[in-house]
Length: 86
Image 1: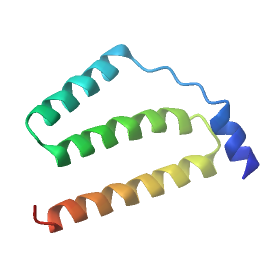
Image 2: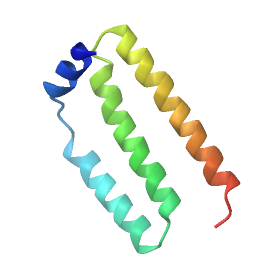
Image 3: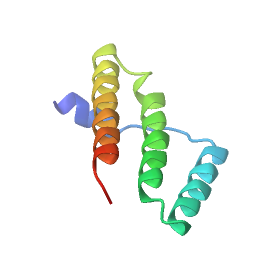
C-alpha cells in the first residue's frame, strides 16, 4: 500500500493544452445549459483518460486495477443516471 502512495505522491503527467481547453469549454457549455449529467460524464472521460496515460506506464497490476475500477464506476454511473428521474 505504501508503494501506491509513493507512486501517486511522485507522479508527474503532462497534459496537452488542447485537452484542457476542450474540457473547460465543454464543462462551461454544460454548466450554461444546466446539463449536469453530461458535464459529469464529460469530466469523467477526460480524467479517466489522463489517469490511463499515467497508469499505462506503471506495472500491470496497477493498470488492471485502474481499468476494472474505472469501468465499474462508469457502468454504475450510467446505470444510475438512466434509472433516476429528475
